[in-house]
Length: 115
Length: 114
Image: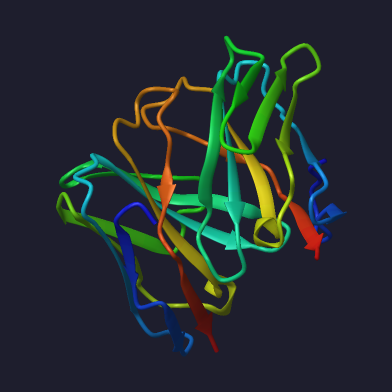
């Protein structure tokens, strides 16, 4: 998984509780991404980061926030989890990002269930 | 090929056969394409990529073909093995953004029978 770890790997939580997912990389890549994967929707980008403290929204960012205080860590926070956020979350990294030929490599995923 | 919806296309082959997985991409401005393999419970794994200035690229047991005229991408797997069983999906990058924006297909389920 290209030096990418995600924690926790599985989590069950209740509606209304805050949840934070962590992505850690050892590749020193500049760009990091959070995706969610759902049946019928494929992979959809939530937020991405193009450097320390530099983040921006993806296509499904409502209800999520992110932070990146170090190159190697990218956190995804659900401020108040809802059942619609039950999904599998993947972190990805890429070296350059801006280049249209830059490959993204994915972590192992976190399965989140919101009851 | 790729499709939108809950039911992914499926391809069943016998071990040792060659497999061809298809993908119709949407954006004629896309200039970079990637094939990923995703096994159950794991993250997508990079297989092979191709730039739009190429028609064909070969890797180990895999070949990607690009037909820009009809916006079609295919992945050929030679001598398919049971370990190749997974969901395969293509991704396209049209550039024009400040990040490596990838648009992903829904995927094709490949099942290899021993």
